[in-house]
Length: 317
Image 1: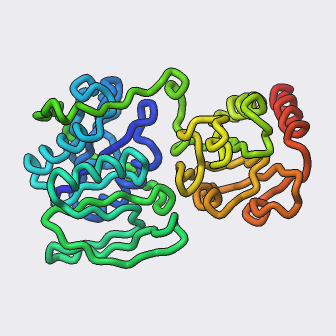
Image 2: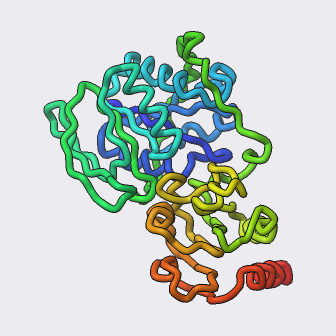
């Protein structure tokens, strides 16, 4: 059985969330990875997640990220390869593209899966996250071609040490003008670095930062640690930072090695987004803040004093 996996790219490598999706996919059949550019990724293509085939789609064809066009491309590959399942990471893009694919093909889609087992009769037994990961749902999906997204923090990426090189194909899909009606271009401020969903270090800021200007030290700290800045919902509600930086149930679920939460109280919706972090350090003036019950370490104090001292110590080293 052929399983198509939409692979998102982080620099010259598959994004961490896509590596997890590839790991789950290998238990379902022969994996074919689908990559929408960039061209420089081609050199690494033969070793993507132990895939047997890699389909490279020139980003110029879709004009960047165009969810309907990406879905139409996957629909064409289903017909060409005879795929029995299509997987993507449970990221904003993965969920959006597979939702479009379901609408185009009439196929059912199951989001945020943590386990999938073929039933042998056209069915799949699956377990998936519900309520932002607070509950697990067991279900059976029956479809000629199954569509799944994989929870970004539930499966450890695992690539075999030695795998044969995949066959690389340049693929050009048949698109209509309507497929390209909606396209997203990444702004200069949002490009050129690691994404929030795949960052190994995230420096979070909440209401305690005090306002838009208060994020400058957090930006500096994140840069020194090789990470990115994330924020709580109240920060985006106040208009201090863009929604794409929000961590939480209605934002991005993160799985960094380190999450440094500064001035964040820790509402349950925010915790649902950062619970996948391997280590959480909280800086807060309130010793009773809910975030402290989820933190591995806590510093009780004013972030406006502590963060500059952290920055100075890192620069001194």
